[in-house]
Image (cartoon, rainbow, N blue to C red; front, side, top):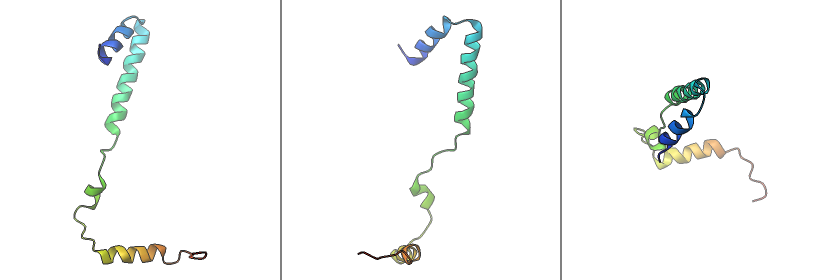
Length: 72
Protein backbone atom coordinates (compact mmCIF):
# COMPACT_ATOMS: atom_id res chain seq x y z
CA UNK A 1 0.00 0.00 0.00
CA UNK A 2 1.40 3.39 -0.97
CA UNK A 3 1.54 6.45 1.25
CA UNK A 4 -1.16 8.08 -0.88
CA UNK A 5 -3.38 5.05 -0.34
CA UNK A 6 -2.84 5.21 3.43
CA UNK A 7 -3.66 8.91 3.48
CA UNK A 8 -6.84 8.33 1.49
CA UNK A 9 -7.86 5.45 3.75
CA UNK A 10 -7.25 7.35 6.97
CA UNK A 11 -8.87 10.59 5.83
CA UNK A 12 -11.99 8.81 4.58
CA UNK A 13 -12.78 7.90 8.19
CA UNK A 14 -12.60 11.55 9.30
CA UNK A 15 -15.47 14.02 9.48
CA UNK A 16 -15.83 16.44 6.54
CA UNK A 17 -14.48 19.25 8.72
CA UNK A 18 -11.33 17.27 9.56
CA UNK A 19 -10.94 16.27 5.91
CA UNK A 20 -10.99 19.97 5.05
CA UNK A 21 -8.24 20.57 7.63
CA UNK A 22 -6.13 17.86 6.01
CA UNK A 23 -6.69 19.43 2.60
CA UNK A 24 -5.74 22.87 3.95
CA UNK A 25 -2.53 21.45 5.37
CA UNK A 26 -1.62 19.74 2.10
CA UNK A 27 -2.19 23.02 0.24
CA UNK A 28 -0.01 24.82 2.81
CA UNK A 29 2.78 22.29 2.16
CA UNK A 30 2.46 22.84 -1.59
CA UNK A 31 2.82 26.61 -1.20
CA UNK A 32 5.77 26.25 1.17
CA UNK A 33 7.52 23.87 -1.22
CA UNK A 34 6.93 26.20 -4.19
CA UNK A 35 8.58 29.13 -2.36
CA UNK A 36 11.72 27.17 -1.50
CA UNK A 37 14.62 28.47 -3.60
CA UNK A 38 16.26 25.95 -5.90
CA UNK A 39 19.43 24.37 -4.59
CA UNK A 40 22.69 25.41 -6.19
CA UNK A 41 25.93 23.51 -6.11
CA UNK A 42 29.15 25.24 -5.12
CA UNK A 43 30.50 24.25 -8.48
CA UNK A 44 27.69 26.19 -10.15
CA UNK A 45 28.36 29.23 -8.00
CA UNK A 46 32.04 29.25 -9.00
CA UNK A 47 31.47 28.60 -12.70
CA UNK A 48 33.15 31.21 -14.83
CA UNK A 49 35.63 32.30 -12.15
CA UNK A 50 39.24 31.93 -13.14
CA UNK A 51 41.08 31.53 -9.84
CA UNK A 52 44.78 30.84 -9.84
CA UNK A 53 46.76 29.40 -6.95
CA UNK A 54 48.22 32.90 -6.50
CA UNK A 55 44.70 34.33 -6.06
CA UNK A 56 43.96 31.71 -3.41
CA UNK A 57 47.22 32.39 -1.57
CA UNK A 58 46.52 36.14 -1.58
CA UNK A 59 43.05 35.57 -0.16
CA UNK A 60 44.53 33.36 2.57
CA UNK A 61 47.09 36.01 3.48
CA UNK A 62 44.36 38.68 3.67
CA UNK A 63 42.11 36.49 5.77
CA UNK A 64 44.67 34.97 8.12
CA UNK A 65 47.42 37.61 8.00
CA UNK A 66 46.59 39.18 11.34
CA UNK A 67 45.60 35.94 13.08
CA UNK A 68 47.65 35.55 16.27
CA UNK A 69 50.24 32.78 15.98
CA UNK A 70 51.43 32.58 19.58
CA UNK A 71 52.00 29.16 21.05
CA UNK A 72 52.99 27.44 17.79
